[in-house]
Amino acid sequence: MKKLIVMLCAAFVSAQSYALEITHEMGVSTFEQSPKKVVALDWALTETLLSLGIEPEGVANPQGYQQWVAEPELNPKVTDVGSRREPNLELLSELKPDIILISKHMAAAYQPLSKIAPVVVFTIYSEEKQPLKSAESITRSLGQLFDKQQQAEMVISQTHQRLAENGRKIQAAGSAQKPIIFARFINDKTLRVHSKGSLAQDTIDAMGMRNDWDETTNMWGFTTTGTEKLAEHQGATVILFGPLKEKERKQLNQSPLWQAMEFTRSDSVYELPAIWTFGGLIAAQRFSDHITQELVKP
Image (cartoon, rainbow, N blue to C red; front, top):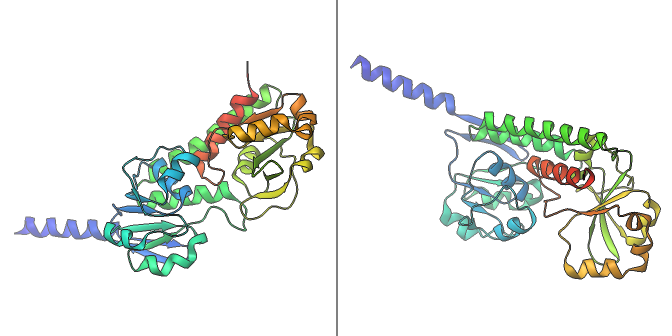
């Protein structure tokens, strides 16, 4: 009998010690145990979950994730729960998740989603314009929530080490003196240039490199501008967020303005593979790796 009482007490203490209160951007959620069935409606949060070894049950637009985010790889059998802006509430109710993760950009959906499952809100891209710092904080919070603290610290440490190491490689190659322009083409005349508040900016800051663009940016860290504006930055290295479509590549090759730019004539234009420009720590690592790969060539 005494043994039974001790066992029950131990189980009670264990359950009590696991009860976790998570403060997020739109409230406080309490969990008696680590959530198992997870739905993520934000790709940066999906990326972070996967970096911690957590396979979400449902994801918003997984095909889009596979195209634009690419890594960490998503289980092809994950349930598509609708778009990031308009999740399928009926399907979510059928899934019966233990938790739904969103960013504050989906604040309007907080109440209806809360009727289905506890909703936790974390946002990397905001008016604070510190995505790398925010991604670290969110990685720690999710590590705590899912009992993956050790994995979270490993991902954070790995990110710091990777960015610093790649920065040293670029310095040693003599490629750090030239400033960088990060751009994504919207069409042949318009592009987004990423600077303050972008993941690309925070990544090269940590690598000891300089961005040549100092125009005002939005909360996502980019400025929408005309291609001709790059004529003011011809001495920079231009890094394009790819992959470019064949039509876009053809337009650049046939553009007299683009071909006349010094960065084009000096072969200082590089194209990145699919990396989510609004991602988290894994995206920052991949940015750093691919920038280094392009700028430190034998």
